[in-house]
Length: 169
Image 1 (spheres, rainbow, N blue to C red):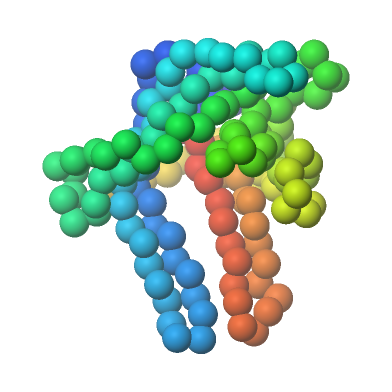
Image 2 (spheres, rainbow, N blue to C red):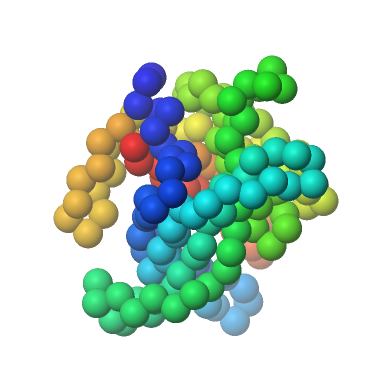
């Protein structure tokens, strides 16, 4: 699927705006954090392993403003896409100095990998749920989307942990 190579762009100046709904459930009920997040791809820098990382500046805007965004600087993260020099091709995000493998290439349904391979959070299976789906967000249609399940723990009667990301070319 050639379009899947476009789901992790690293060109400086490109950006995405995401509507985030982060819900935490506990015994006192749900706690919901809703906001818009903008991620802008910046320049390059080398990490301690000598890999070329791409800088990713993040911004946050309150949801109640709707699409009248008033973004404030949030955090500076980095991105890395391995083009096969290690025998595997994958993409990772480094947030707060925590490396997470977010994608594995080539993209195929139900392929899985350990997203936490390079951090101390313990093994976490990530997998592709859909690799060529259509997603509609706020009336905007996105074709050829890739859905990655990052966490699907529904076994506890007390807590429910489910996380996913949708990538669009």
